Image (cartoon, rainbow, N blue to C red; front, side):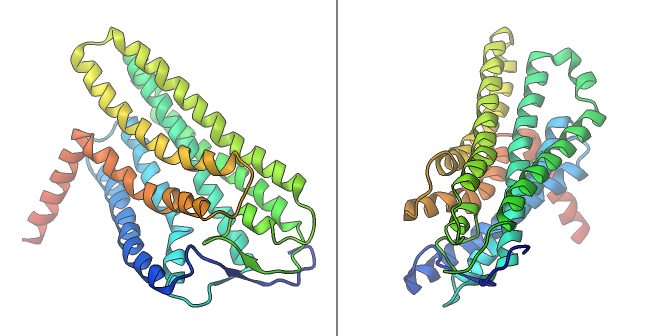
Length: 308
């Protein structure tokens, strides 16, 4: 840290104080995290191995699943192990690193969802030009742009944070490190920093959400010109995307577009989008997508044949 700090280690309050409740949470959240890693990992593997899943939509889906694994892994493993610890601690540097990667992967996911909406818009509204517009090169550029957008967003957050002096107290009222709980520990006024963070995090989420809603409205209007079968297939795919968008953006906008508080409800909302939503995404996409389910069955069938 560039500024002199008396604080080198932070104590994390956690989600609940009751040891019995914490153990119960451990039993619940460990399988959820494992399901997140396995489910999203299976999608990444299936898309990369299956020749039938070569369209841009599945290319973006594999990267979204990869981001879900890394996004969840920045918070959940430590959160789960802390549930069994009497005193939950993290170094100040470790806290800043967690904030960096949490926001990096979070905004990368937001931008990937916007990219996926654009892909559906081109596929449904300009079907004859789809493969020309969504070339392999453009797909790689859009994915790289999503990662770069997340990186630059996160760098801004960290540049704000590392300039703050921390001289006590050292108790962070959350179950992981995030900007607002950490700002409350700074021994200086953080109003300006809070406004910048609100603009950087909240407005990115809100603007992206509005772009997504607008794009899906345009898609739905254009579907009137399609056949009944075409409408059914397009609506099935779009319904999966819209569900994921609502699950991710709803809690994020709730937390970042309002004044911060220490309410337990805030922590519970954060649990939803850090622990639960990454697990639901592969379920949502596979349950509503026949091509992915068929490809997974083929992949599983090949593995079983190889083991015999």
